[in-house]
Length: 133
Image (cartoon, rainbow, N blue to C red; front, side):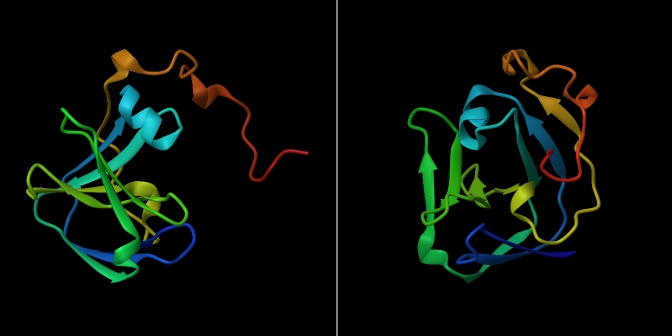
């Protein structure tokens, strides 16, 4: 499969070719800090390839010292972007940065022991197609 993606400001565009092997919703405190949300939604692949189509000089990778945690983002708009982990053996793709539909569902929630105290039964909240009036 071939997927395309971009950052919010559109300066960075990329293409991923290959299959995703895992799709995790991570609730650890580091991923919550990364996203500013309840969890990160990351796809993982040990065989897919990443090709930057535009804006590669705007990609910044942050490695949290003393950990395996890292994050790639656009220095203009802050959007999360793909990066390699485990010494280049694993491609990590934030699901929200893809412009192409993906056809797999998350495998599981991970690190739920450290999820936010407000992250319970969120599926029961009212839902709106747009901003409520």
